[in-house]
Length: 319
Image: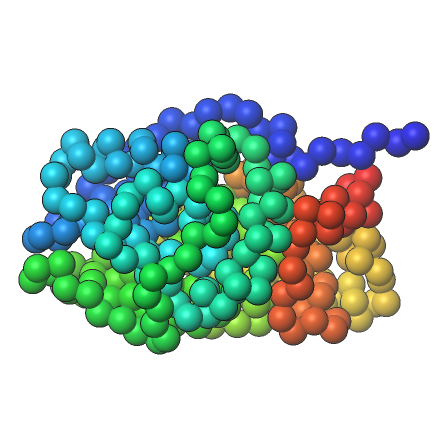
């Protein structure tokens, strides 16, 4: 019997080195060598945290580092999207408000429980001390559509939906006064975009709108904080190129009449030379190509990933 290759992320057991750095007057970045990032805004009277880490135990390290630089209350937690690895640490912050787009809230309702089980199975290291996650889902206490403005004293913070990409609910956090942007997983840097719930046709156009904001500092979803115009432009353009390259390769394979496995093998081979050194490349590609194949063929909206569907897909493409 042929042994099925394990999820690439299940073989990833090495702890990453965390960096906590100030990137503008009011913004800090918590990054860990390609693991999911957290962005922190320290205003005049309160703190905002964007993306929480995957468990309360992991969030405790973020809180410890915040407390090294401020004793202001953590009033707001912002969920840039619904993925479990981004939201299940929320309870540790004990915020007054957990804020998400209405689209993100709707995705939690529709598929949150299934996605939670799916992600925990894929990423055991990223759900360290998963038993510290409270029962049930992480529910936003406040939602918005399009734009919401918060004031942390005199500091203006904008929560914006500028288009679909990584998910339909993507939210960015923008400090217009200092040009600082927390992008969530719309932008990655040196890390493979996970696109299993993506909108491939929309994502590049959303990135064009993001680029037009001309940020001076940017915290991507994964990878180091970007603090020069050149690095920000590179992060945006390389993310755009990756999404466009998958889409064009999948379109070509579908037009040639190939099935999903054939499309996957050709797309992987075509993209590995350019992107194979990026973090979690081998893990993301089966999910990314499967979603893109769905979008090109018959599913304009992403199908729900379950732990069972994950395994079936992985066996069919990597078994």
